Length: 77
Image (cartoon, rainbow, N blue to C red):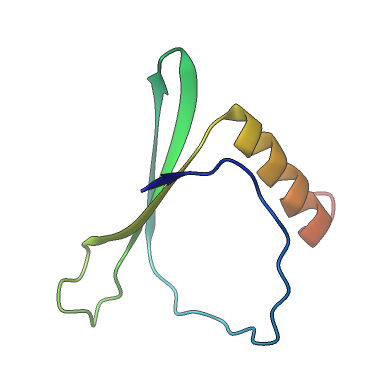
């Protein structure tokens, strides 16, 4: 699990689309700060389907940065 501290652009020559999975989410307060946690689950053909595969957390600062990245990528949504 990781609390994202900042977003940094990276350059990659290999870009591929990953297989779709489900993502659960929850929000909670920690020390007076609101946290959003996203949990991705393994694909149905994994040895343990529906097991949490990865978890990321963002706080308010991270959410604001992510909203900016989404708008830059997809336009004004």
